[in-house]
Image 1 (cartoon, rainbow, N blue to C red):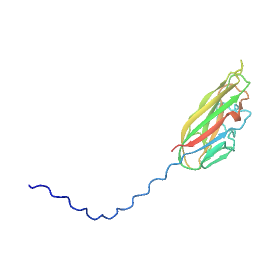
Image 2: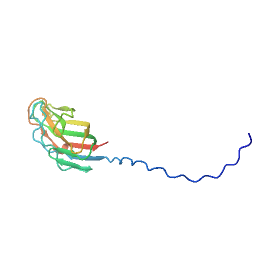
Image 3: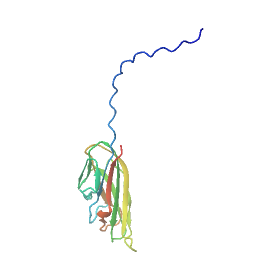
Image 4: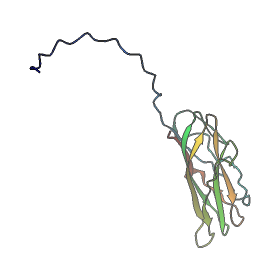
Length: 173
């Protein structure tokens, strides 16, 4: 076999290939934060979770399309949402404890998480407590998230201190 010859000239450029499929729309995160309403007594129902229209209908801030009503916050897009709530409460009654959970469209069947650390001793200046809950929810467009509360211990007026409490919803996927 003899020596390799010189490289030849480049050939003509071929035809363009077919256009590829359009990619998915870029994900845009969204969020909303609402303080809660002052509610005179959220400790009225023994182990039965009930709503108290606790969500303040004026958001502190938001980015995205959310609808706020006294019975919850409605999301406008399907997705995975991080929902976080802090509820600060006060009471002069002895040994009260209030639990909180979320509802979706008025039902707690799809959200079993419960925040139940709201014990107030009611003596020796221990007259306040808080419950916090953070979870991920798979929501559809039009779903509404709300809060419910239940008495877990003694009866006695327990005030939800709205100015020190909030609900935050973030679409993360």
